[in-house]
Length: 110
Image (cartoon, rainbow, N blue to C red; front, side, top):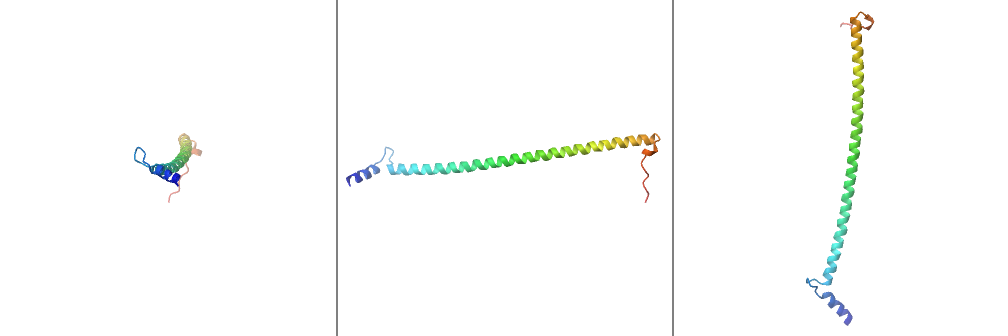
C-alpha cells in the first residue's frame, strides 16, 4: 500500500512548469493523436494533388493530340485547295489559249 501511495504521490507531484506527470502524459498522447491526424490529412491532400496533376497532364496531352490532328487536317485541306486552284487556273489559261476541252461546261439556265 505504501508503494501504491508513493506512486500516486509521484504522479501528483508538479513538475517545474506546474504540470503533473499525468497531464504531461495526456498532452503527449493528444499531441501524438494530432500528429497522426495531420499526417493522414497531408497524405490525403498529397494524393488528391497528385491525382489532379495527373488528370491535368492527361487533359493537356489530349488537347495537344487534338490540336495536332486539327492542324494536320487544316494543312491537308489547304494543300488540296491549293492544288485545285492551280488546276483551275491552268484550265482557265488553257481554255483562253484555245483548248476548249479544258473550258468549263456551260451551266443550264433555269
